Amino acid sequence: SISQITRGELSCWQIYHRGQTLVIAEQGAQVLEYRHDGEPPLIWLSPEAAYQRGQSVRGGVPVCWPWFGGLGFNPDAVASRYILADPPAHGLVRGLPWTLVEQVQSSQQCVLRFRPDPDHLPDEAPGVTPTLIVCLDQHLTLTLVNHNHSESEVALSQALHSYFAVSDSRRITLQGLDGHPYVDALDQWHSHLQQGPLTLQGETDRLYLKLGNQLHIDDPGWQRRITLSVSGSQSAVVWNPWVEKSQRLSQFPDDAWQQMICIETARVLDDMLVLAPGQHHEMAVRFMTTPL
Ligand code: TA6
Image 1 (cartoon, protein in one colour):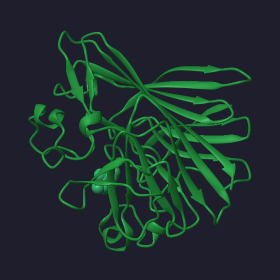
Image 2: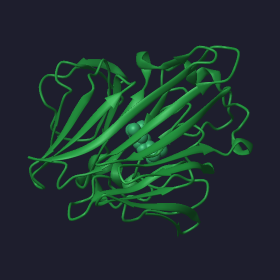
Image 3: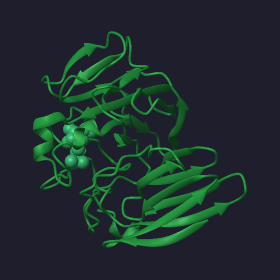
């Protein structure tokens, strides 16, 4: 079933399909909730979430486009293309109105497509329109589609900034990063090499590169493995604000760092997206859980 609901100032859609519940805000096409009946949520949403026009809700899956991070500190070539007075972090569209342009429902799957309202896209945005496709079958798949309508090549960076719910971020182990290089946003953007599985010991803000198509979050507290199955991307950002940064974050209780981990399927740094005129590109991530 698909029904329209309102959260604060935001118009949202609630989908119930094959024992799964999904809530997505039209603003930013931001997934807010995703869970299987009788299980802890997969996607984390802040208890202090604010549903206000023009700002991203803390948690869920914000769409960072047409750049990830901030202009300037992020060495993406795309960042230099935007001469904006006060560049918003994580691009231009996560706080803008998007519209549900298509919904298709069958017994097997439920597919919704969202696109930013064209009259709200600032003219700095390149001749590319993003589409977010939400597909629920026995799992959730999110696909960020880019289509370059312009006559010129466009370089952009992007991320599906997914917040995952965990029993205790101090006890989880991230698998699939071993042997991959990462750039550390907390260490002057120096490159490092990941040795072995990742457990969190403090604030973590890393851009992993040359990744394969699967990452896992092993959560012994909830005895479950969350698997991210990815296509069209070889980079991902791993972020946990830990104690100090949590106190400076909006819509974020001081201890919420223990309940979440961000693994953001991305096209950043040397995995940046370069679209030829007319090119169509898809970056997809599928969220699955299995017992641990
Ligand atoms: O994805 C990691 C990150 O860039 C962190 O550095 C932190 O800024 C986080 O995104 C949240 O950003 P936001 O603008 O949503 O508060």
